[in-house]
Length: 573
Image (cartoon, rainbow, N blue to C red; front, side, top):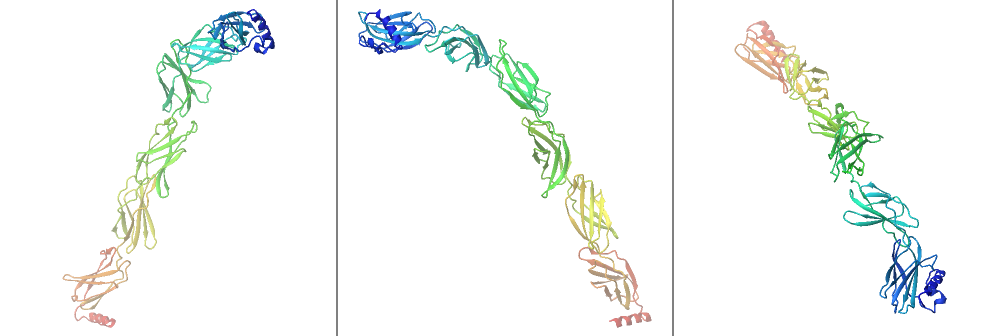
């Protein structure tokens, strides 16, 4: 088959839905169609085809005709026997073509033929309309859409000549994962089923500066410190501070430094901070993420300090005025210079344990997420006094006793409690360290002393058990029962367990000890004046030597009255 017959074949093949001439029975006996044709690549004006080699072929001829007009070829190309790939040019953009590859022998007879339908690529795009930075790593590009294009390729090239391509489907489109503050050359290509167009004329654009990485802290209850690492190529920074839940900007600030201290803020409040950098071209960089920072809480004010007892342990209860207007939760910390501490989320807590007579300087601070406040003004608090010690009694005069004790520190007053053995009670209030009370002979007293100050009373202390001297005997009767003997009787005295009877004249002393209220003193000198003293004693308090003396004269010899007294004494015996 000669070469001009190929155009007839093209028409017939087109009628056979471009599925290969070998499927048309008219040519089945004329030649065998074993060439397989494929499209390697396509542009808007050319297509590169590949085909299988045919034995005996001396050349290959490639013809391109519009699919809707296969009898009117628009271009052809001839390739040598060793070629299995070739380019056909002079095509129009975005046109569906039927491409025919014929294997020819030396006589230009057709040995084999193959076809394929494919489109040329769309026409070259106009340059990108706009390229804007969405952030430091993203461009937003816009472009004019092309009829017949199914997608688009954005080609980027950085200063290092590295090329990357992004496939997008429409305009505008985002190009991500770029390097901050880097200049790129961008072009666009349209794509259809046949291939892609040539790149458009490039445009250049530079990404913006990355955001500063902000960190913040609150050094006091009305200030916030913001700091960040330097951003490369930044010439200035702009920051904004907002109060949480407010709609207006509180403070804005421009600086070339890498820190910013903001004063005059509300205590215990949350503030929102963001910032960005400026490049040398005067372009605003990417905004930082918002960060939250709370100011430290207000200094608490101590409302009351008092003593409490809990399970037998003494403690100092401290309360304060709680600030209900702050954001978030607060933790209060109470401390004393004597080391006990306590923590509470409410408005009071107890320092425990504490002892008597201690002087505590108490302060309260509060903490939020930003840190602790300054301590409150100190409150000096003295715990209840310790109980008085070294109790002692002195019987100063008859019927009067003085109770004494050691001085106790931090005391406003004392109260002494005296309870007599028969149930009678007496108390004494004083600011000194002694108390005088009525005491009678021959009684046992239980005594204690409590100390008081503004914190309360001292704990129970020493109890003194004291017994007064026994009472002096009453109704003392002394009679001379012989010239050398006295009989002495008396009524039993309270508190006495033993009586000492002593008779003394100018030359001798006669003694008598007995538990009974009667005593006979013998071997006295006749007709002598004796001083007789009765001394009551007991084991606890000793002897009462303050009892008065009685004077008695022994009988004279041959005196009838004396004889009568002796006779009376004998009768009693």
